[in-house]
Length: 95
Image 1 (cartoon, rainbow, N blue to C red):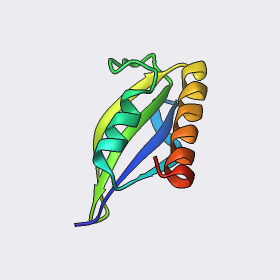
Image 2: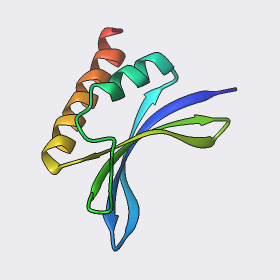
Image 3: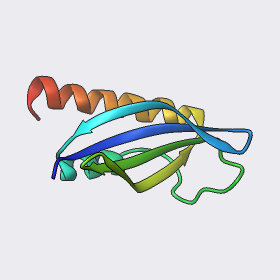
Image 4: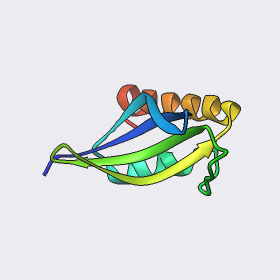
């Protein structure tokens, strides 16, 4: 069973979520959960929220939503920076 983790970025447009970004976190469950726990945002979303980050696991190409955060534009920017730094560390420094 091939297991992969992703963070997918969504925006609400006309009441529907549209995906517009995706980070591949690899297959390490602990690292994926740890990284997502570092992100800024609110796990209690309502209809007024516009931006979302979703931690997703795929097993044999079947996706499953694990957690979702709603965030402001500033939080989204900070989260993208955090993710990029961690992915760089993982791939280039082996951390």
